[in-house]
Image 1 (tube, rainbow, N blue to C red):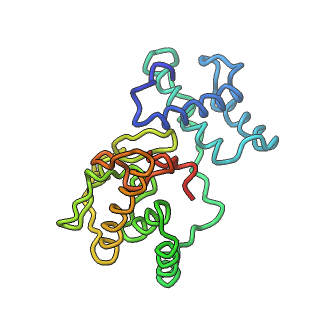
Image 2: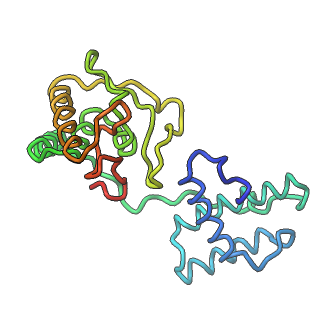
Image 3: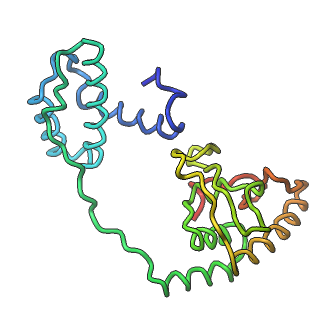
Length: 225
């Protein structure tokens, strides 16, 4: 895990792996790699379920990471086979199905956001209009907004580790249209934002986030609601 620092898709992925490693240590830390068997793994999972210390989803993630660790041990010829291959652990079903807003509810939400105004609300309007993800919206800078063609380019995302980075996949780097009312709102917002930033001694530029916090910086995804 330590050797993988800086090599993963994002700092957040590395932090998530650290959590998986911690769970592995809690469950299997007193067992030598060469001694671990499929029966031990099943028994430890059963005990963890009985004690209710870990959710089924957490156990599934732990198993996926343990399987990866043991595969590395197999490739390094520390063990003769990967015991996790003999332990079936299907992905848990979600507790409840997600429900989307109806077209009428979406229109109402858009209207409420428009009436509210401001950085957070207009960012929500853009997500409703374009289908952008939260991190993509928060990572958008004026450099990638083209008012002549009414298009924006998703070049970055701002994640919960407060890092501006490219999207995980090349398919996520894409052009998106924002025609009609959204184009008018966004153009007016750029002028309003420039005035707000000037009031605190900041000059708007291509690198300025389209949706900023009170200090003119990127909005922390953990604080965006």
